[in-house]
Length: 495
Image (cartoon, rainbow, N blue to C red; front, top):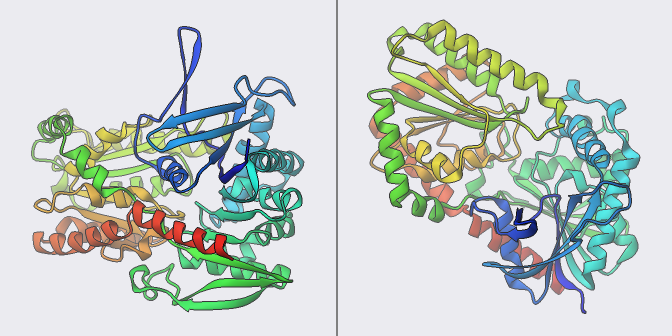
C-alpha cells in the first residue's frame, strides 16, 4: 500500500470513540465546529491522507486495541494511526511537561514556569513515537503537518527518518519574546527542530517575529525576506501590532518559510444553526429568564492565562461603583474544568469558584442573581443562542494565542440587535478586531473604563462597531484560512 500524501500529526483524535453493545464504534464528532473538522477538510485535496494521534494503553510499548482505523465521513476517507501511551506517559508528557513547563513560558508567565517538574526524556520519547508513526504513514515526499507545542521535537525526528518529506508546523499558542523563551533549558533542541521544518506557521505577525528573534539570537539564523503586514491585521496601534513580518529565514544551507495567518471561525455554520427552530426556542427561553436584564457573557476554560478572575473582579467593581445596574445586568461565566489529572490549574479553579460565590453572596437578592457560573461545557448550538442574546461579551485573557470565542460572538449577533465586544489587547485576535472595545486586563482603570464605555455605548456606535467587526470575521473566516494554508502548501510542494 502506498503512503499518504498528507499526514496530520495532532494529539487529538479526529473522531469520537463509543462502545455500543460491547463493540467499539468510531463516529464523527457531534459538533461541526472547531479546528478538527477544518483540518480533516484538507484530506479532500490529496489522494491519500492520514492522521496520527494517541490512545491510552495499560502497559509501556503496548499497541492500542485498534492501532489503525479507516474513517469514512463527510471529509472523505482517511487513515488514523494511534500510538499507545500509558497514563504515566500522558501525565508526564502532557499534564506536567507541556502544561507546567512549556505553557507558562509560551504565555510569558515566567513565575509559573517549573523546569524541575518537567520530564524531558519522556517528552522526547513521546515526540519520537509520533514522528515514527507519521513516517510510517507517509510517502517519501509527503507533506507532514504537525500541530502545536507539545510536539515541538517531531520535525527533527522526521528529518532523520524521511529527509525528503515536506514538514510543516502550526502553533496554536502565542510564541514568546526571545528573553522569555530562553528560560527553557531545552531551548536549542526545540529551535533546531523548528528550523528543520520547511514552513512554520503562527496566528499573527508578532508571534512570527518573536520566533525570528529566538532563531537569530540562539542559532544564528538570518532573515532572508521580510514584507509589510496587511492592513487587516492592524500593523500599527495595537499591543500586538507588527508593521513588517519575516516570511523566510536562512539557516545553514536551508530556507525556512514563516507564515502568520489567524484561524477563523465559521460564520456560515453559526448563522445556519441560529436560523434553526431549536435555536429560536432556546432564544425565547433565555429571553424569558432574563426579562429586562442585560446579559453579559464571558466564555473560557480554567486557566490562569484566560483572565477569568480579572473579569470577575471587574464585574464586582462595576456593581460597586454603579448600584443603578443592580437587577438590570447578569454575568454568565463559563470556566470549563480541565481534564482529570491536570492539577496545574487546581488553584485557579478553586479561586474562580470562591470569587463567584463571594460576589454572588455580596450582591444577590431574593429576586436577582448577579452571576452564573458554568463549569461543564455548554453544547455549541446552545452556546450560540447565549451569544445571540448577550448584550456584551467580555474576553479578557492576560495572554491568548488567538481566541475564537470573540469571533464566534461577533458572528452570532443579529445586525438589528448589535452587541459590544470588550477584548483584551493581549489576545491574538485583537489585531484583527480593533473595533472591539480594547482593554488592558492588567489595569483596573483600563478594564473599568472599557466596561463603562460598553455599557453606555449608543445604539448607533454599537451598530457601526459591530458592522466592522462582522466584516473582519466574515473575511478572515475558516475557509479563508484553509485556502491560505492550501496555497502555502502548494508552493511548498512545487519547490
